[in-house]
Length: 113
Length: 115
Image (cartoon, rainbow over all chains, first blue to last red; front, side, top):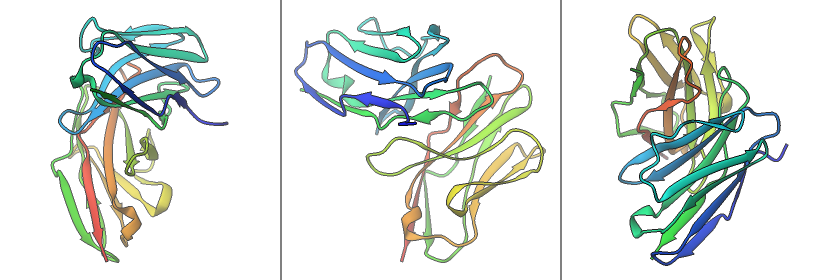
């Protein structure tokens, strides 16, 4: 298996622009997670899905952030409009069941100018 | 509420010496416990986990961790550190009893191994 796939790997955009991050989880995994990592705040859980249904979005910073999982093999995290404070590395992760470990993607490094 | 504490921001060790990265947890039920490692500019990588059974768990790259229920700890250990072990280490917990699917991560401990 190719592991969790994220695209793009790097994104540089200007304040006010829309940003869409993409994730393909490992086939057969029921859970999908979106995290954000910064030096100041560390690793933060933004939202997670179980069987394509959002379960907990309490970590989503504000209404500018939205996430979807239209099917078992694809998820998006959208920021609109983007702000410089959104600059971070965004990770997607998936796991098969609550017993099992999460597998992380390589991350998307987002820079908002 | 579930929580994980990694009391040390950084651990410095000389190559060849044993290393310990500390982790304590709090859950209402029995815990699933995990250790992850993050190398620079990479995603988190699974090292080992404790679900049930033997309190000493062996994982990747020669790492091991000991589950101590009375002290609610799950310290990561390695008998002989390598310079290549230098990275950021995260402890994580999931409550066995709860319905949550997510892991609670500690804030991470930076391990620095000097030659």
